[in-house]
Amino acid sequence: MSNIQMVDVRGQYLHIKNEVDAAIQEVIDSCAFINGPKVKSFQANLESYLDVNCVIPCANGTDALQIALMALDLNVGDEVIVPAFTYVATAEVIALLGLTPIMVDVDPDTFNVTADIVRSALTENTKVVVPVHLFGQVTGEMDEIMDLAKAHNFYVIEDNAQAIGANYKHKNGKTLKSGTIGHIGCTSFYPSKNLGCYGDGGAIYTNDEQLGINLRKIANHGQAKKYHHDVIGCNSRLDAIQAAVLDVKLKRLDQYCEAREKAATYYDHNLSGIDGLSTPVREKKSSHVFHQYTLKEKSGKRDTLKEYLKEKGIPSMVYYPVPLYNQEAFRHYAPGIELVATEQLCKEVISLPIHTEMNYEMQDIIIEAVKSFYS
Ligand SMILES: *Cc1c(COP(=O)(O)O)cnc(C)c1O
Image (cartoon, rainbow, N blue to C red; front, side, top):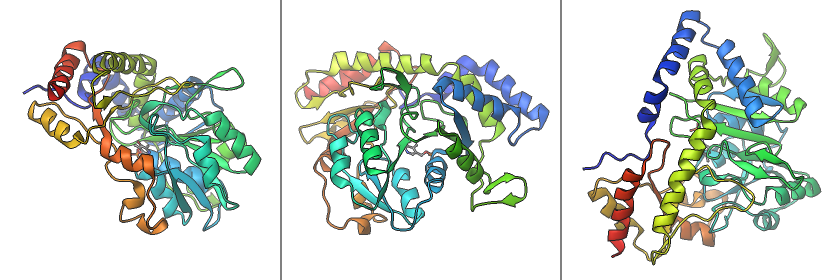
């Protein structure tokens, strides 16, 4: 059996063990476990990496999305547009706050929403759109979606849990980091994410100083001044040990993105041209940081391929097998809808192992196995 893994958190740790261990030890020695200097320094370093005014560290990516929505002064029944082809967290927080998730389709090639898809779902109750930068690339039509936001007066929250580090060519000529194009960006530091800590973690970011103040307040029990609670908030903190780990890894994020991109290019090279299989399509205005390397199996044999790889000791994953609107918890929001691309993708997608410790020998084993399935 091969010992190939979907992600190799441990292998990556071994390269930075000394630095990580020392940083964790420093937190323990200082006993500044909550909101200590490590959290402050990580916040500042992430602000400068993203070139954004305010970073608010929080407990996880789901909280980040929830706090972002809480900061926007919404009312029960307001509509939030969200792709149906995403991780549940994106829609869950909308429902949890009594808002109405409007589940829309995605582009079948890039897996992201387009401006046309958003436009056709707009109503007078649309208050927020949440583009999800799926699998590691920024929603290509962010510029057009921001134009729509201006014209129709809604907010844009980027679900950037999978795309941290990606670059977007903005229409103003500048290159912006993913998550800093909309009004608010949200990230997860779940261990297997591209910038992962060793537990749970997340962050919210914005260039709008006033929004930044509100977000920070909401993440901290609705208080700006201790024991003075202006609004209903929650308790969502990044703990200092996780911040210490993240500070070590943030310095290497670009290098990690490059390693993933290199592995993806090698897959592309060797897997394109197989009848029945399509390799990932790149957004034109975004770089791709390949949180996942996701193929489409077009001949109806996706599950057989997955089983075949498993027998050879090669893991693969299906992100995501069920459209959001077919999940028991979400069915009543849009009874009977069927979105063409979402339906198709749930049947066709299969993600291969990709991580920072990948090498060509490992990839050759995977590539050979995939090829032999089709021969
Ligand atoms: C991981 C993820 C989240 C949630 O992050 P957690 O830290 O697990 O709460 C939200 N949206 C997307 C697209 C994700 O991949």
